[in-house]
Length: 499
Image 1 (cartoon, helix red, strand yellow):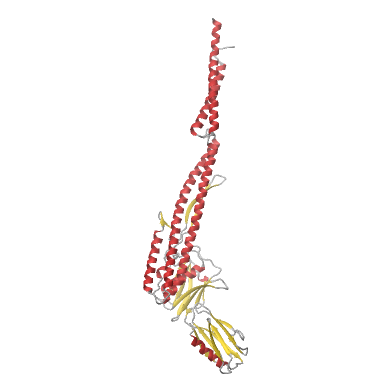
Image 2: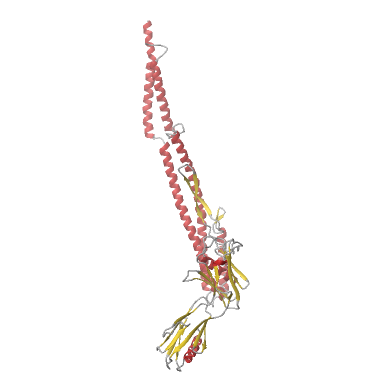
């Protein structure tokens, strides 16, 4: 049945043309935008995923900027620490030169002061965008990553950079929990008394027999003039005193050679021998022997630090000599070695007459020990500690280096090593942090590239395919138009029936 009111063929052709036009419009949109998924209506799930990934890319761009800022800040601190190390090394050279007595120490001190002023200038200027990493102890967090978990939640990760305080601040002694249990004093007073060691001459003495004693590397000898132990002891006493061994004197006590040592911080070794087995030595009741050995202990009072307790930031330790207190307040990640060396710096900085200091580690217990020696009048001696203080600067004591005196030059030589090591540790720490930030920057850049590639694979159009599809749809469009034209002409055949 034919109808001039309802043209089914035209309806079908029109519907086909509409479908072809819709696909053609979509393909043309892909080609013009370059995206196969340009909005949520194109593919809701793919669009949602791509948008989440795009937000992560933008977040990583901000992280990259944060890392660049952090890397620059740490680089400034590292360069400053290395410069301070170089300047301290120059100061060490000046201090070494000052050990000679026939130099102009006043001029050397002037050079040291100029180098100290330069160090202060470097530490004060070592800031980037207002942040100085070599002043203070607070950690600095640098945003390094955004971590997205499987449930969609996001958390930030940071690279923590520890400040390295290279100031000369003395710190503030705290009033918190007592730390007195972490120190042990050897005595209640620091005295100038010599340390005594007795050598007993025993056995049968043969006239002409030679007796030798090596004390602090110096050998003295005596040939027995009489067959008595008292003669040998007296002869050795005279020989020892005549040898002029620094810090060593000998006193006769019947058949005993009493050796007194005022040598500070170093044990004095004694080796005794004889050319016969008849006469013997007995050093400090160590047992009779033809070749006896012994040691005179170093003279110094000591503060021994705990081998079990830890050290926290703000822990302050105090040594009292006479009526004066000398404090050191620990910074982050410090140990009792740092505390012992810090207290040495504090005492040396005060330049107390007749007082000298040293730091050792006990070879038996591994405990760190501060030694204090006194060449003058007896002074009270004690130590204690308290938590809750403000840390002492890493270059504390630098301002008090004075090489114009023998005592000052001696103290400076040991203390400058501590300061140099502190600046080296600071530069090393910053170098490690800078390397980590650089690695993270490269990772973040790679992560952004990967995310962009992933987004592209989800939403970007395949241009080769779209181009081929466009040509095919254009042909289909022409055929659909032709079909519609034919279908619209069909009712015209009905006119022939009315002719």
